[in-house]
Image 1 (cartoon, helix red, strand yellow):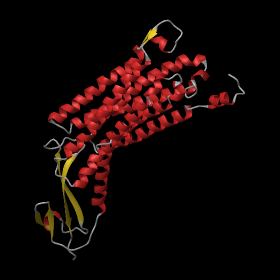
Image 2 (tube, helix red, strand yellow):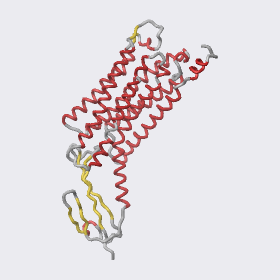
Image 3 (tube, rainbow, N blue to C red):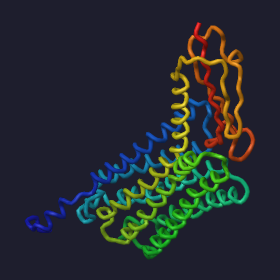
Length: 355
């Protein structure tokens, strides 16, 4: 290559590596914050962790490994034009790239499966069966995507050493299946995002509360959008300069997983934040008006309760007490791990008489 050629100089300076590495690590850290807050919220409320939590943790660990592999690939020349990467680095670079691609398949799928497992506790009947179908389908459809890279050539080493004897499937085979996998994931993401709205429709909650819960439980919709964008860049796999042009595909693969992790964490954080605000309100709300009775009001009736029953004579301050009746979405008393419960809260205010 002519070192004085302006085009050659510009090509030598092209480097998508720093941007790619920076973005994937940012996404990994961003997802870690939400996952950490989710776990903190559950542990501090003494709910304990369930299968959906462990699956989501696994997804994030795989995302972190994927990010580390991208970092290692960057050190070997990823981000530069393929012909500018030192020949001694290419074999290892190809291997790490294929390993990272397989890991990313599991990371993205587990992040979606985690939310599906959460929905298993909130659904029943045909919807429950559909959620199971989605979980199993996501895993089965993902496996060929993770494995095709390793079985498309015989011997496998021909993937990164083109000079050795052997044969490979046309690259379009892998790309075509990638489109199918993406389409299936998008459909499942959108379907699972709609299920909370179906469940909430039958609950006697205020419209505002239903909308808040529905939005919080439908963040998987954005993971589906990210999957669509990622699918648009699958065509880069068939090019001859993937290590430079594959920046967008690499980034959007991480975006999809990180978005799913964040989306699965938001419902738990919403409940935790709402309960924390209510607790602070009950703790610090004070008044000094007079009164002898309190009224317990519900949508259909109200009951007057003598002050002496709930307020000791020695009380110097009035207070507010909230009585909450919780009902599981599936009926009966909710298990301690339920994320969404139907709540009926009655607030009691009592006012001590001035002496």
